[in-house]
Each structure stands twice: as C-alpha cells, then as structure tokens.
Image (cartoon, chains in turn blue, purple):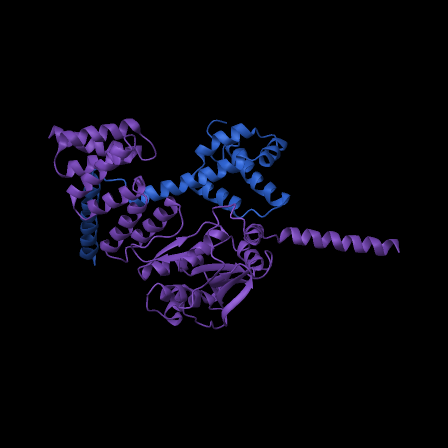
Amino acid sequence: MKLNSYLRKIVSTALLAAFSLVCIQMPAMADIVSTDQIATEQRNEIQRDAVRGFLDRADVQAQLEARGVDAADALKRVDSLTATELASLSEQIDTLPAGEGALGFVIGLIVIFMLLDIAGVTDVFPAI
Amino acid sequence: MAINILRCVGGIVVLLWLSGCVSAPQSDALLTHFSQETGANPSVTLAARVQLEQVPFFPQEDFQCGPAALATVLQASKVDILPDALVSQVYVPSRQGSLQVEMLAAARRYGRISQILAPDLEGLLEQVQAGKPVLVMQNLGLSWYPQWHYAVVVGFDLPRGEIVLRSGLVRDYRISLTLFERTWQRAEHWAVVLLAPGELPTDEREHAYFQSVSAFAAAASEGSDAIQLAYDAGLARWPGSINLGMARANLFYTQGDLNSAISGYEEIIRLAPDYAAGHNNLAQSLFDMNRLDEAKQHAQTAVNIGGSFSEDYRKTLDSINSALQR
C-alpha cells in the first residue's frame, strides 16, 4: 500500500517533469497564415463594412444623435469591435425588419457597447 | 354613425399597415420591369419561363422538409442519396426541423460546395435559369409565429408572376412570386446552391465563392484534388483573386509541394506587393527549403507591413533569425 502510493508519486512527478519539458522545448511555432485565418479575416471585414454602411445612413445618424452619441465617433470605433460583437451587430442589421422599433434596438446595442466601455466593463472603444 | 365611420377608417388603417409590413419589393420591381418589356434594364436577362423538369421530388413526411429538400438538390447535383439517409444528419427531433448550418455541412460531407446566395430574387432566378435548383428556407407563418419550411425552387413563369417549387407533398407547387418573396424574406432570404468541385455559381461575388470553398476545404471530407479543382475554377473566373491564390498556394504548402507553393506566393506578391500574409507565407516556404536569406527578406517585409496577423509574422521572422544564428 505504502509502496504503491510511493510509486504513484514517482510516476506522477516523472510525468509532470516530462510534460513541462515538452512545454519548455516547444518554441513558438512559426507557420503560414492559413486559409481559415484568411477566410475569417474576410468575414470580419465584410461585417465591419456592413456596420459602417449602417452607421452611414441618415436615419441611423439622427437616432444616434438623439441618444447623445456623435455619429462620427461611433463610425471611428467600428474598427475596434471584436469579431463576436461585429457578428452580432451585423446579424441584427441584416435581419432588421422595416420599422422604427427594430432600428432603435440595434442603435441601442451600439450605444450599450459604447457605454459598457465607459463603465470599464468592456474594452471595445479604447478611445473613450 | 360617427362610430361606424371611425371603425371603418380604423380598419383601413390597420389593413394599410399590414400591407406595408408584407411588401414584396423585389418581385414588384422584377414583374413591373418584365411587363413593360422595355429592355431598359440590361441587368434583367431572365427568360419568361424556366422549368427544371429533371429535378427529382421527394414528398416529405411530417416535419422532415429539411432532409427531403436537401436530398432533392443533392440528387440534382448527381449525388445518389435519399432523404432517409439524411434524417440522422440534419433532422433535430426536439425542434422538429433542421438547422441551416447543418444543411450546409451535410452537403459538404457529400462532396458538394454549399454556396449561400445574395438576398436577391433576380439572382436566385438566374441560378435556376442556369440549371441549378435552389434550396430555400421560408417562413410560412408570421415573424412572431414562425412556420419554418425548406423547399427547392425549380422554375418560374414571369408572365404569370409565378415561381415553381418542390415543396411538401406537391411536386410542382406554383405560388405567386410576391407570396414567395414574403415567405422567403421572413426567413432572411436564405438561399443555397450546391456546386460540384470545379463548378461555378452564376453569382458574381468572388468573396462569396471564396467563403464557400474555404468552408468546403476546412471540412476535409474531400481529397485535396477536389479542393484544388474548386480553387482552379475560381481562379479561372477571378484571375486576380488574392484570397483564392493564397488558398491554392496554402494547399500546395500543406501537401509539401514547396516549389508550387513558392511560385504561388510569388505570383500573389507580384499582384499585391503590400499583402503581408503573402510575404509571410513565402518566407515560411523559403525557410522550409533552407533558403534563409531570401526568407528573412520576406519575413521582414511582412513584419514591416503588419496587420491582423502581425504576431504570426513576428514569429516567422524570429525563427528565421534564430536559424541564421545557428
């Protein structure tokens, strides 16, 4: 029994050592930029353009101003949206049915992303 | 009397509001243009009537329109498969339906590239005219009471303003274009064509093709020959496409064909000298061939240009530098 636990200790220590050795010996592997990475990048860029185009609309800018957000500021900060935020915003914009209420909702989302930044909860718009 | 008039006006207001909600702008534009027959808009190149008779039909059981519609487009694309074989792959019993992403993934498993079309009715009909049945999603109910449904567009009749679907239990289900557009619009205009590797969509959007093909390549259910065929077809259509060129060179690289990879990357940086990822991948390939000095040059260029993958470029340069010091 005692021997068994002693053995276990040796084995686990040896394993641990082996693993940490592997970790240390693995240099940061240089590699090509993969096709997946390029595709993801392109997808982000398309979504960024969609959000920019949305913020360029006169009715959207009017709604932003009504909420005390400078439209030019909002446009500048699209660059720092994360991929997830971009995806959620552009999806909302894509599926936006005609009507005031829905438009207000998406603008609300944009404003929330900006407010959370000011509050220090997120770090989407570092310039604020 | 006054109350009656008020009711009447109220009713009209409600009706106007409802019809405003269910407009079908694309059908209206298309049909107006067609009825005028002016030829003023050269973008409309549609025939009056098209019907793809040879597309098979699988009457669906219960809620299984997903497997039935998918089998329809797969068979039309010469993949021998029946709806029953697809049920376990795309049908989610708890939702009594199929998810769109799973429909796309299932098509890839059978060696087909699933391409999502632009939300454009005319573009959809152009695909049909080119012989491609189009898998569509519809919301037959209302936005707040959805009835999701998959069907396959197999024809249209512009003089009668109709579209023809393989849908549910009806082989040639004819409905008005406007009604179709409303149900399709409520499903976010989701429309998909399946492409055999080497086949191209009528869709002009290079980025959409690249997205579809890269998802197909990542699924890895196909051999690299099929993937290369798809890249080659895309490059024949869009010879200057940086993304497709990168994808093909990357394929050569992962196959260990460094010479082909290098000439691919060299072509890309000739087309786009400021494309950092091209320099990085060229550097990595040269590095693998132990051509360290050239490798270092391109890695340095990539680092100088920077961009989204600047960390990767730094890593490439670092490993080349440490190899040079050894």
